[in-house]
Image 1 (cartoon, rainbow, N blue to C red):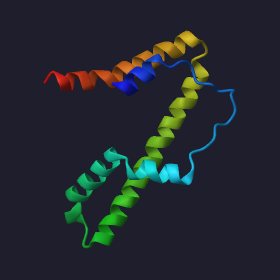
Image 2 (image 1 turned 60 degrees about the vertical axis):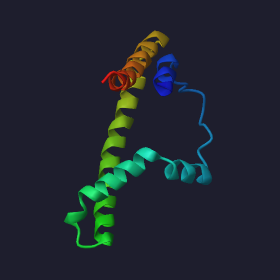
Image 3 (image 1 turned 90 degrees about the vertical axis):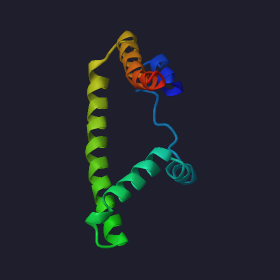
Image 4 (image 1 turned 135 degrees about the horizontal axis):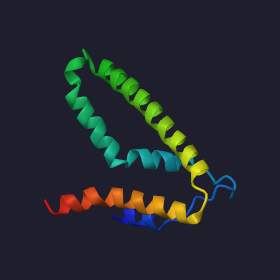
Length: 116
């Protein structure tokens, strides 16, 4: 809910502010290591598709290639969508409507889970 609120309250992106300092190596390793969602997906995929591979190495290669292809496709689509939105949305009000919509889309399933 914190992320949904943060997204909904954010303004337009600062497209002309210049490049930001990139995440360092230690920060990237920390992010990957403590990404619980990634661990859950990896363990679930390994358990689900273990029978497709003859060995753990073969399973690792199979999952690595599958995750890489999935990441390339999904990240490319996200980047394309970001470029299109940056060109279509010109005013602060348009960005505010988009951010509120995205915040609500993130919050609705969470609230539904609370009431089940």
